[in-house]
Image 1: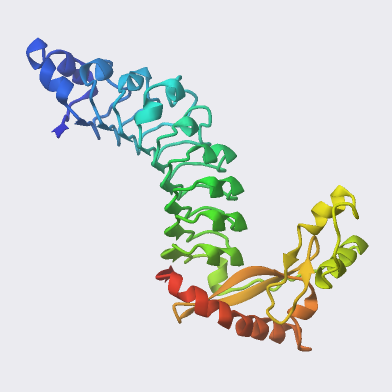
Image 2: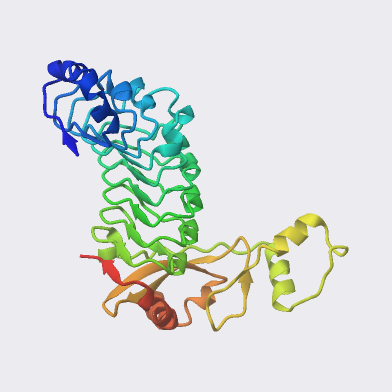
Length: 355
């Protein structure tokens, strides 16, 4: 390990003054640590002087751009550039996606900079990337192209201004740690249940009022952080329901009564519609629904201590309100219905952080 602590005025001279007798030692260097050196640009001799470099730390400087010198580091696996001034046009070098870094770089930390958006043309083409940290920036959204990072295992986006989670995030097969805390997120898309490798999900200090019931399908989830969300102190009561169309009523009848049909009996659009039937989750109801359903908050007991409001969908209001008192029945029915689900799901979650 080598640590240089010099002023930016002498750093270039220091690298160039080592001479031919030290060239072999420079070329063999694997880790170069340059944090807190008041650097305003990368050293020009970086690529030629350290061809086998695997880790570069330039955190805590005054960098506004990572220059083309970076592209010459064909063996670089870890780049730490947090707490700089990166974020403007040209913050990342042109040609990054076509450089050897696209195949070698595994960890990239750009937290504590000034990015207002994730640079899709370069950063999201780093197919070998396993860890990406962009916390403490000014990100407004997560681009759908995030799904390009198929090797990603850890994604840290805490401390931004993100309002929505794109469904495409669920297309990351190896994602194990997802940190979205301290944002402005109001809902969690049910597609996240497809993240079968997810072990830790940090959502604290957002604007969540409920969770999708599909989150119970995250069978490997060990830690769920929810503190500082409205769902911890108050729950959604606004349940809406629109009457089903004649098409849906007819389709429900076909499905509930198991009326047989063949592709020769119905046009293609009706066959596709019938294939979209969803079963009502109420165990006492054998109904189905298509476009029209009732939003219902269901309280599920985790760890024997916390009751979390999960969103699920029923085929009709009768499935959620068997009693006359609407306010009382919503809670009592939700609690009683959740007991069977809780017995299956509670053991999956080792830690639920609410406070």
